Amino acid sequence: MTHKLAFKYVLPLAFVLVAQTGYAQAPTPTPPGAKAPAKPAPTVKPAPAPVDPALPKGVVPPAGYVIGPEDLLHIFFWREKELSTEAMVRPDGKISVPLLNDVEAAGLTPEELRDRLMTQAQRLVEDANVTVIVRQINSRRVYITGQVGRAGPYPLTGPMTVLQLIAVAGGLLEYADAEAIVILRNEKGVPSNFRFNYKEVIRQKNLKQNIELRPGDTVVVP
Image (cartoon, rainbow, N blue to C red; front, side, top):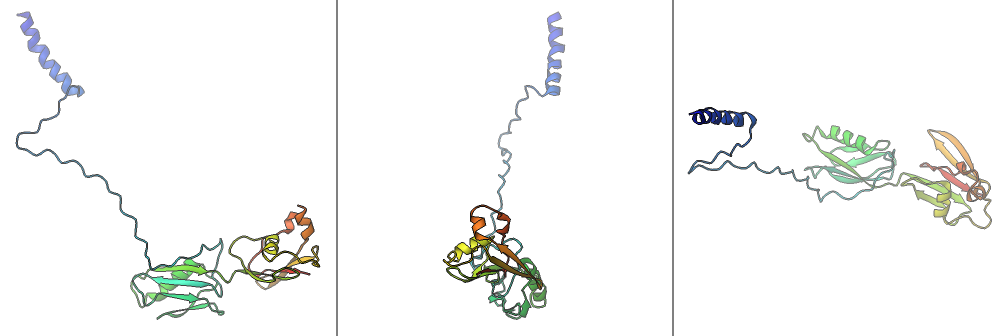
């Protein structure tokens, strides 16, 4: 009799403990004829936006770049081919864009020109989407004249020092005054000049005079 009572009370208690702790829970069987629950669909990452083959390749402008005369730009209006064009910045700083006529570009960054084009195109196109691509940078130039192998203008597409420009220009000629080279600079109408002693620099002396050139600088080698 005692064993029967123990079995009567202990067995239900065991079921209560299993229900509370979660142990020994068997999976719920699928009833006959019923469909098994569907598995969640795997997460699919969105495909990247396609690259428009109509966009030409451009150059990477240097830090602080602003558009200037003779720079070549590609103006691309998404889905508006009649407005898209390739334009050279004129000496007056403007570019010609179909249906928009003349647009001031010089002195602006590519992003600023993009905003200006979008604003002016609103009267013709709703929700205009514009891309400005810099194809060639011709406005950033430095000049070297005098006793060097190849005097003339040189594009300034990245950092360049006086010594590097002299090397690009073919080096100093035999009778050059290497100790009296001058860099002429004009910023916002204010002229300035810097001395450069070639012999000191190549001997690793007074290296501060080997300054980084800026657009419009002229190096004079007497």
